[in-house]
Length: 130
Image 1 (cartoon, rainbow, N blue to C red):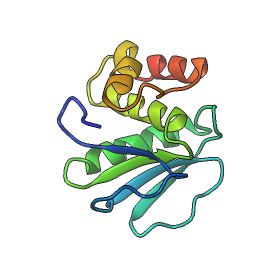
Image 2: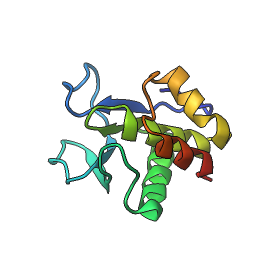
Image 3: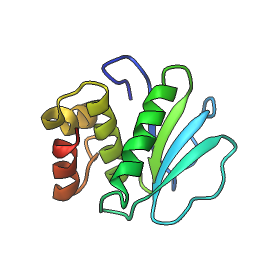
Image 4: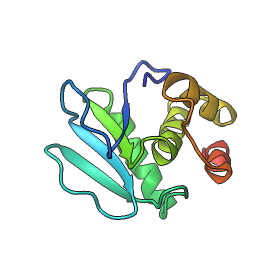
């Protein structure tokens, strides 16, 4: 997904095969349990399916790192299915990149997936993310 700044971030579901193309250099993974190790640097955020990140401060820090690294590296955000947690994280990342919080869910649904950000509390979380 292209952010307003032009930086690119790949969103995906971990249950799907790895997409064709270059491997990421850094990944942020939203899972209830620590995912297996990857061939690239990664950061794990404890986050149960359909809910919100357990540690919001750590989540923000991870997004800030990913945004910074996206300037020069291939980066990705992923969860199990690639829609709820991934979409929510992408929407919060869009806010950090300059999208108004009230429009971030619509931005991600337009530029990533119509299914992004699955629950009312995920949508509310994005609108309050600043």
